[in-house]
Length: 382
Image (cartoon, rainbow, N blue to C red; front, side, top):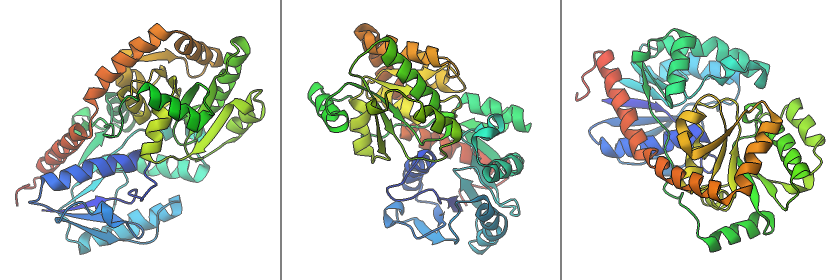
């Protein structure tokens, strides 16, 4: 079978959440299924490291797709023709975007529907595109995958798709993540915060990550409980809106906040592993990969009690109301001030994180693909 895969988010040294999902699952799938031919479709020149096996070939379809106008050109006009030219038997889209003008059987992975519930968090051009196209993508796909039970129910309810057509494929955690030794933690603190204890927040800086309220909560924490604590922000600016800007401008303890920008995985592991806690107070998540990574490192998690996060973290997180600044400050203080609570969360996290592996994710994605081929009446072994 000739299987075309949308790999436009496989960007060397710039992998984000969906890019990591694509990389880790497809690397395993192509090696496990040498009987099939995989064509990876990029939107720019690609690094040869993404051609994982002899049964993979790379193809480029310009232009690069980083704006809704270019999405329309690529997915509406160019992709249907490319799928036909490549004689695709099936199409896998790990980011959920589809060619509505193609009848090739398709598995689309939709990670979350944040734009349906918080459209104000996105620039208008992106918001309008997502709200117009993703309902159609959901109905057009032969089968859908998503990364949590929360998202499965949300997609089914929002788009009127039967839950039986949607498979859950949990994200995994990279092999690099493990607890740091005491000496490694001291080294990490020296590297990132000049030796001060710190809370880490990881993720692309956009409104739904709730960075503005985290700034306010950190200020409140230091005002009520003075300490040497620092806040380490790891991630690249995506959409830094007025609310985030106002929160930052009004911060009284800016000197305690450190921005690292994007970190490569080994550096990210050190930054995360050396922290007293991960603050992950996003008010909308389909999964929340940094939570699973923190649990694997034995780092206590302060998480928003919202959307998929209680499902992912279970008893391995200390929860707060993401819309209540004082409650975020409370949860951060309780974790940072209580060694016994940190030890309990650390042990629970290490145990719970074992369910989130990329081997499991790849197996689940391929099982969903097999169901898709049956839904489409395809014979997988041909």
